[in-house]
Image 1: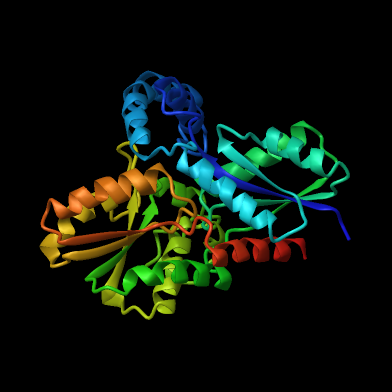
Image 2 (image 1 turned 135 degrees about the horizontal axis):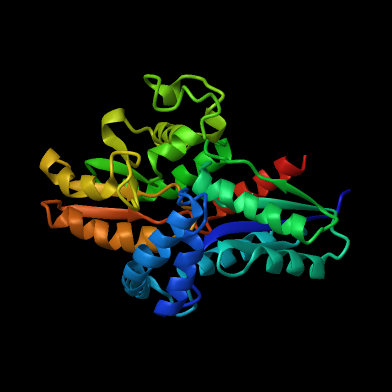
Length: 340
């Protein structure tokens, strides 16, 4: 039996709510060429000169509203997932972030300390869907650190699991308790990406957003198409929960900049929905497996205000799966399938 270790990888978070830490984090995040895919000099001038100086103080204030005494919710919850998974396996499990701490090197070192003769490391990017700015950048970052340090062990990656039956079941069951009360609509709010990222990731160059009903027509583009994958997640979860087509819809949040992003936009839709006779709304954010700034502050707090102030009557945010038992079992299953 091969000696195997596991690394869970999430997005990351500032080390604190101090503006300097938020600034450092935003610089690392936004200077990533897979997040803002502009030429380096333009990216540098845009981010260091305009976006970060303006955004860091505002983001620091937003982080303060959701920060826990133990630290960043994303980091704390990712650590709790690591611990819950560790209780179910003898393989050592470590944690890494794409931006900030713990770094890939720190995760690899911690794993080697626990298992010096490790032969294979299974990387679990905690992103259900493939996107250049999430799954791809996380995997490439881990591969770069692996290559740079010339580790002797193999690195294997758990692929996107957007339609894996175990993931769909875990997500649906985490949502079910929140759908027992009367509601008008369920909104699946996914993290948005620029349209050009979808087009760039299409290996055929002629399918995504160019063919009618492209998400539902079989194509070699689907393994790397974010829009297809989130749409399929929504369809499968809605089916699992027995929802009719008119009971749910999907949108995209967290837009940055003026380029065309995937539509409809969550921030635009929330104030509109009460005018469309949607008075009781339930919202879930399936592109996140751990609650974070984008779910807790943007959707649970600001989203609720936008909806209720424009005529909505009740607004329920469904937490991420975080450390639910079915989700922990799913992660273990994904790891075991990747080993095999």
